[in-house]
Image (cartoon, rainbow, N blue to C red; front, side):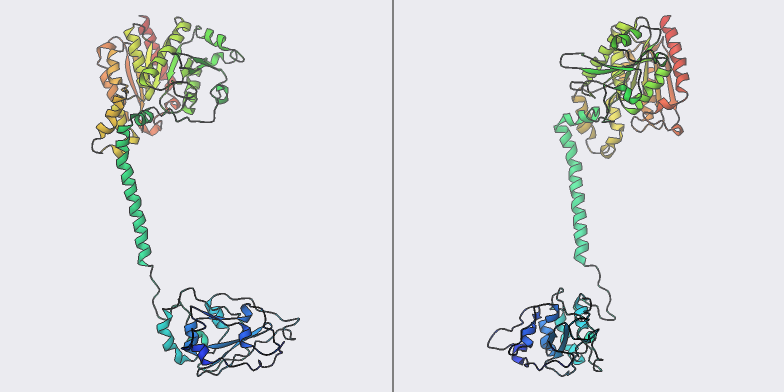
Length: 522
């Protein structure tokens, strides 16, 4: 181990090895040159240290050739560099040790400094300023990831005047003083625009393909009309209506047709709440014959009979003294079967007959909401044709027919002005046997009619409900019955399914249904 004195005399590295000879390849051909300590400290009996950052330096080969090369020395934990040629003769002295004793106990090694500048800072004052002009044209030829890795320690003495390696050996990729900052590569901006354009073209292709897909596969449009696959809320047990706060409701099942089963909820009036605890289906069926009117509720598309807004309406009607019987059409909720307009109407007819067989002379009203208004008018028209009409029909958020509703629905906004919209979408619905022609059905209905509609309804526009009323009011079939239209101002925020929140609803029902019963008995 060498002490604190000057480094030992070393064999001179010939210029042939530094510059390359015609007799063989250059030893440092490539992007960088690594000089092991053993190359510099070859002498008899000397064992070079292991290859480490202290024992080597990686300098650009071209730069070393231009600057006359550097000889890197390392003894123990001390390293220094000395030019082996050129016009600069400054020698960087070995760095001092903290605590003395050479590389033994008490020596403190500096922390490693990464990067090209850290490596060059350890070899200060080694290249003449005159070589900067020769270095400039070659900077662009070096790879950007070339680096010089050398442990950084401050030299013992100041460098010679006019010979500073930090300023003379420019770092690859460093911006000289006064040079403007590099702008974002044009290719990167072009790549972003290319991806955005590709995405827009893909979306346009999907937009154009959907109408053709719907036309080829009408079942897709049928699913979009019924939305029976949407079960919200999902994690509820329809066999336990008490979980939804309906602890005076009984769940049972009816079978309108073979291979078709529908789930039914029967909620008794709130006055019978205590008596209903722990009772079974026979007791609930017997209560239909008590002195309370019955409302058959037909819900709209999507969801089940356990939907939140529907449950809240059951509670309101129960508190007003009505039996509420509701069910899921075939294909909805836990009901079995394939949905269709004919099948939904037949399910409603079967439940109505089941109610009439048990209710005796008690009034039976039919309440339809949204798509359920189409089922309700189909049902009532059929009942009127067989001369067994209900006592009244209540339509909440109704439409005129499914074609006009589909054209006004929010889902159709992006295709409403698409060329051939009627042919692609509306004709497909009609060809699938879905009409729900409320505007035609009301001409054959002979019972009292109440229409409830909110002005801010985003699903079924308010003007469709008003148009239906204008069709029904002058109809001859309603000549002896009351037809009433009740709007709800948009400021109330009832939208499509929150009319049950209106504090005026009990009064509206009491006045209308009271008059309808009087007209029916006379």
